Length: 271
Length: 254
Image 1 (cartoon, helix red, strand yellow):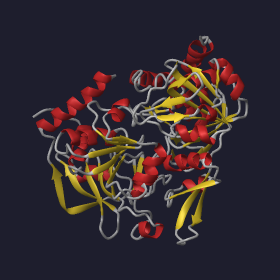
Image 2 (cartoon, one colour; image 1 turned 30 degrees about the horizontal axis):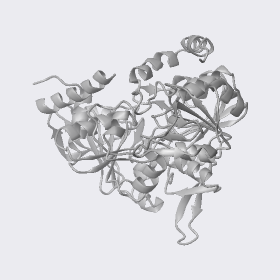
Image 3 (tube, rainbow over the protein chains, first blue to last red; image 1 turned 60 degrees about the horizontal axis):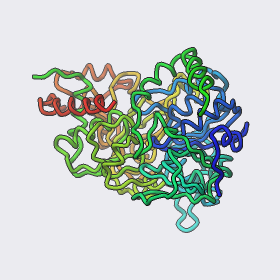
Image 4 (cartoon, rainbow over the protein chains, first blue to last red; image 1 turned 120 degrees about the horizontal axis):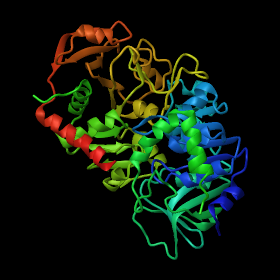
């Protein structure tokens, strides 16, 4: 059975310095509250993994938690650059950032291979691009049946998978719906997992298209209402597009970013 | 006639390039705006597919991201990210891929990764690949929408994130890329198409009010201009009204 914990206790228990940590949620259900707690607990030397680094990783990178980024698209969707990410790559600030870069198709397949306990996944991808030259986890492979040249990508098996979901029951069964991204694969591929939810309920009513992760696949569950904000939780609240736009000037300026860290993260005690 | 900007002209020209009923893999930003404009004007039956796993989205507001809730709740089907790429894009089920670019070259190869020749110390770190490499490889054909200037239109891109025509004729076949590749590049100045023999992007159409010298000056290679150069009609009042309405839906939602 998954443990029901407070957010500080859950992060303290499952996320350690030097871990590889996947924070998934494709635009929807992004685990912002959990990432903020990781920043607050000053985790260091993390390898963070995510298809779309987005504002959540801009914050982790700017706060100095990250040594290496594994990703496929690092921008502020519809707004522009992630300036903390760019500052780290272009100027090594606050610390140098190692990159392992893929396409979405490659990353999605790497999680699926990890969840399947396979060493790699096969896809039609990357051929003719400059990515294989830069990324050692992309290699050509020959089909043993037809001889066709395909592409292999190594599996992802993070130490920790962190996701946000709409709800869980008291046993820790987790239910999520809407855009489900690669969250199921992330939890199943990871050694430990932390799931924040909008609410913990007595009974999980069926919802069309929902995924249920049984409690025995999840390490710990945390009730964290609005834990995906400024991303959204379908059925609970909408994406706060204004907050994504407002992030741009904060992200552009080291001092404004530091002030945001002090005020919104270190100054805020999680209830 | 109503006032419009070069960007409006580009968006309207791109929307016109989309056939009604087509299955379209939509990138965020300019492609999404043009696709939604087409759906609101001449192409109500277009099937919009987003990499967030939304198939057949019919958003009433213009999404800011490729995964806004509006896309999911108005979709025919919402699938996982591994599924959208493996079951839907990879087999060639999607007719047209619609992409933007930070740099594009003579052979329509696209860079969205880094500006500068040193990958480890780039002048500008761009967002990266996202879904684009496989969209460019596997969709039946590709349409690109991008503003035309010397910084963006390069002889060779600094990094090949997504393959257009590689090194020229025969490249896609040699690489085994099943899709046709970019058939149109729509800009704020006009439309470029690959030359059928050389695969080189050639200016085949200029928006009304733009001349060929302007287009050449905005291109980082020796741009060829078609003999039978066409002129794009300016946006009609109806198209502009539909575009304003669409952009207003995003402001209203914000």
